[in-house]
Image (cartoon, rainbow, N blue to C red):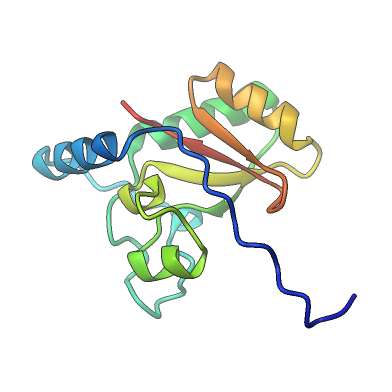
Length: 143
């Protein structure tokens, strides 16, 4: 393949409105929560821009993904969890990505296809976007 061919820019799909992003951001900042900081959800900037957790991981998102793993009887791989703003920009993430709130994770499971994984994630009440180009399922928690 010719290395000069550039990858097409990502087309951002919206699960929610910008207003919901700001409402949940304000809500999360107003309610003191015990931080949930699991290494597999750490920002993948590798310390270039943040300490790995510019925001805390939403505990319900973690619970839902653990519930998904129990349902599947297989582990899922966290490709991208919490993101700092700089890493989100590098990753071509949406300006109002729920990764910035600690409410989203991109996952995959080696033995399950994207459609099956997304359908299973929906059964545990996660909102999903199938990312065929990235070969991951974006999962987020909005409540």
